[in-house]
Amino acid sequence: MKTAAKAMVAAAVLIVAVGPATAQRVPITTTDRYPAEEVSSGYYDERESVLPGAYQLYLQTPQSLGAFWGTGPRAAGIDRRSFAADAHAAERGYSPVRDCLDCHQGLERNLHSARTTVTCRQCHEDEPIAGVFHYYSELNPIRRHAYVCAKCHQGATANFAAYVVHEPNPVSGETRGSFPALFYVVWVMLILAGGVFVFFIPYTLAWGVRELIELLQRKEGHSHGSA
Amino acid sequence: MAAHSMMLKRFTPVHRLFHLGLVVLFMLLSVTGLGWMFAETAWGQGLMDVFGGYANAIYVHRIAGLVMLAGFVAQIVYMATKISWRRPLSNLFGPDTLAFHWGDVKDFFRHAGWIVGLSREPSFERWSWWEKFDYWAVWWGLIIVGVTGLMIYDPVLSSDYMPGWFYNVALWVHRIEAVLAMGHIFTVHFFVEHFRPRNFPYSNTMFDGGMDVGHAREEHPAWVARLEAAGTLERSLMPVPPLGIRILHVFFGYSMIALGLFLLVAALVNFGRITLF
Image 1 (cartoon, rainbow over the protein chains, first blue to last red):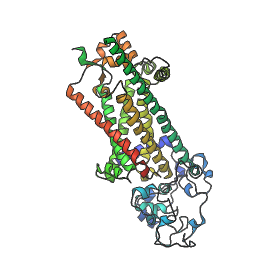
Image 2: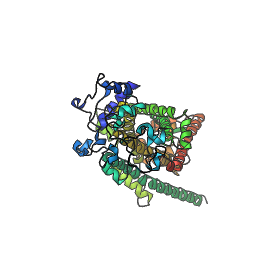
Image 3: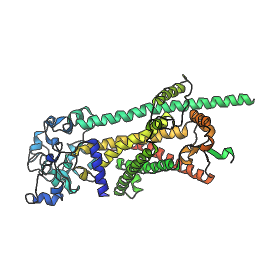
Image 4: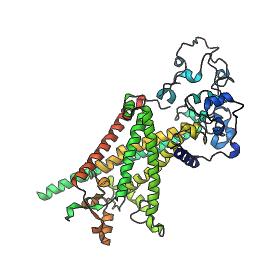
């Protein structure tokens, strides 16, 4: 099944995107140099590759990636605290025992929280909670795949970790700037689906009414004829 | 054999098998997919419990998806063998074709005109425009839902070929296309094929393989006229299946309709309770 699935994924990708050129596959580690990552994410050397789009979640100028890769999520407007060793250091009223959602309202609206039992701190780690861009943060893009994602998703790579866990509302205007691919693709799909329903539902209802009238007329004609 | 025990052959056993496979897999994918989508609600959990819980339901969804894609490949191969490659044009533009042509556009406007009482009802050939639309909608739908489904089938494996944010996009496309397909089948397809007055309360054509000649004269007059003109109408008849088989067909068909309507209503009722992003 694995082989079949792999072949099908390869076929799927050929349809939607051109794969990376060999020269774009950047080996970022070796078994000898990063034993810790080896332990955490399994078969690293074989699998690791970084596509141009993988890191743009953390780039403030993703436009430099070009028309295709540049449509991914971008990191414009990152809060300074995201670079801090203790993101809550200057936060008055902060207490480690408070519910994260008291202040971070709405951030539980993601599939990880909604459909699994994963909690905030299982990814954002222990006190002091570091900003995700702090150099030693476990969520820092250079290691989040190995230290965080791979805890559940065995074999997670940097490419894999470019999934946006706190996904924005795809139809909101803000998403057009922060994750253009999601915004445009979802709108195109909604227009396609909406168009089909907006056309077919009234059309078939009217059609039903037309046939009903025809049926009643025929019955009437029949009863007149037999009378 | 008496005329009333014969009907006009419309679908071969292979066509019916393709449709049956599609129905079973579509419903399996709908139940497991909606269970997954509505995992936060008691209804969604109930749907997945039928399969023994979350993990099993997802597994069934993935396997059923692969089987459906295999069926799609089989359909492409089957269609390729049905085209007479020596004369592909006359084949593709002939009266039995499922390919759209200009006549379908004219038929569509005439049909719409007939509905509002502006024109006479068009005389349909073997396949009307909405039947062709339903056929090709499965192609377009399967390509969209299949490609995105494969992208998120094994995200770690896929990440060798694409960055993870593709999954954010792929999951949305997969969901919207699935909702479109289910919504269309459970409302428009069921209504047109079974509930509009001429077919009410149930059309067994796709399961029995044929339709009553009188009904065919009403629904596909140009087709019947062509067969009569060519003198092949008699040859195109097939025996009506035994009553027991027909009852089984109606029972199966109505179970699927009931399941579809249940999924539609329950999904609408529970829609406000789920986290989509």
